[in-house]
Amino acid sequence: MLFLKKLDKKNMNKTVKKLDFNVIFRYLIAFVIVVPIIYFFIWTITNSLPFPDLIPTKISVDGFLYFFSSGANSLNIIIYSVILSLCVSIICIILSIPSAKAIACYDFRGKELFKLIILSPIILPTLSIAMGVHIFFIKLKIANSFIGVLLIQIIPCIPYSFKIFLDVYEIIKDKLDIQARVLGASKFYILRKITIPILADSIISAASMVFIVSFGLYFITFLIGGGRIYTYSIVMFPFLQNANRNISAVYSLFFTIICLIVLFFIDKSLKLKYKKRFL
Image (cartoon, rainbow, N blue to C red; front, top):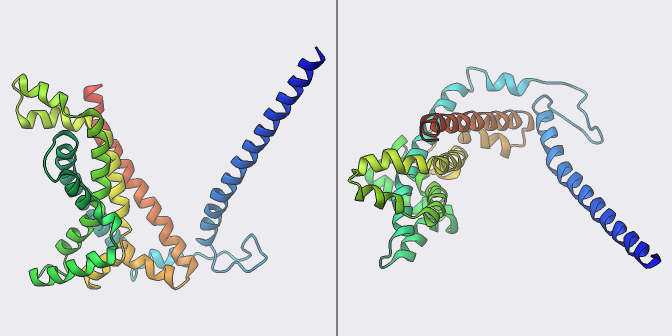
């Protein structure tokens, strides 16, 4: 009995130590995540926070005043950037679905090479790709234009959407498509009634990822746009580099809000259209 009691005490001590470690680890993670977010919001309402002050003594809304001023032209830039990023998202999804399906479901020569080429923008430096493409775009006379910026943003964004659809197709394959074709369904019917509803969640994920990446692209947008195409990131990044924390915090805040609003509408629009119909 004494031996069993000692064992119980040892086990209790081990569980207590594990619980203590888990609690400490959770609080540490929460501290690392929450504190920077709190100070991010604090910097939107103050111009200075000298050491050792933890709370600002002076409140300033200069960042918000500048953001909403006519000189900043924030609304037009936001609309332009959202349209650009949505176009990039749509094109990437249209290109990614058939390419991911082909690689996941069919065997052909050069399959791995084709997969590597699509994923290469993640591996290769963006600078080297952008410089080469810029010369090509100048020859085509599409540099410093919306089309040029749209095409260059597709290059670093398409690997994300492609990888999402590739993972899905490696699981589901094309069995349902084959069954539908056997029953006499047309390609358009299969796309509308089978492919899109099945991939609805993946489309939301891919569109969200591509939109965020596209909306935040700075260097290649500046290079191909030639300083004539003003997107949200083009306007925001100079404030981050100049260490103007108040204005940069305001721009970062609205960057987050814009992304959340657009992603919310992407999620709701697809779910309302397909999930209620098929579930």
